[in-house]
Length: 378
Ligand code: SF4
Image (cartoon, rainbow, N blue to C red; front, top):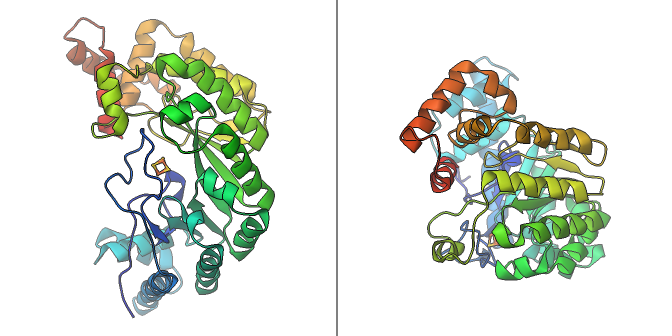
């Protein structure tokens, strides 16, 4: 039996301990201007047989680690043995399986960007095989595009759910048509709603990703309000927040350089997030699980936690300007996670030193330096 398998380059942060199964290669759309994940890589469907062989190889490695636990006297304390393998993994494949086992061995994620694009019978065959091979897995998730979900019939999505897909991560990014077109997202607000609703109706748990800052200084209000409108129509299980970063090499990098797209500052993005939350009227979990989000503690269950979430924004905005700058730089340099850490004098002083260095004593930090820090950090 093979002791290696193919791995794709990405998974969402919430799938850090998931078993990663590469169902397709790269992104079939690959045109979004803000996304560099799969640029320059060709999309390919993988033969079902090949994916099954990978799953069998994963089982072989998993069984090997279990066998090692018994041989070395750990018995069923497999997690401890997985931790040892993680310290010195013989290969990337062993590392991935050990990490999955260390995390409890309960979750799986189908890579790459849009597994829904597989023929329904092939996707369900892979899902069933995965479930039969690893009956202990309780959650199987994947990325999918709204447009592809909209093209499937409800019956197909129900079939995919019954075969074992429990959650879908969809990049909504925005609900504002002009912005979706400008960014070449390849879907309209109406398409997002059709696809999203169908997924929810099929019983598959839906995570919709929103990209703060995507509207830039020109479209931020419409971006926030229309995104909230679309989310209200879908009522996804999760709304996951991301913040725009613009790395060199992205299609939109040139727009920024030419001045056609003017980026928002951190503080403006917080205004945008407030507007978004104020307009959200759906029953969803609002999750901020990305390091690029300035106020990662804005999380909760909507609508019940709305006021508590807005209070985090109030608290940040009520800080004196120097403290807001201190927090922003501390966040962008990885020193702070939460607002409360402003009271940690050791961290506060470390951030002050960075500000002095960046501003050469002038205490005014150039916004471009903040973007650079953020992009260097993520
Ligand atoms: S569909 Fe998703 S992965 Fe593909 S280019 Fe757009 S954002 Fe990137």
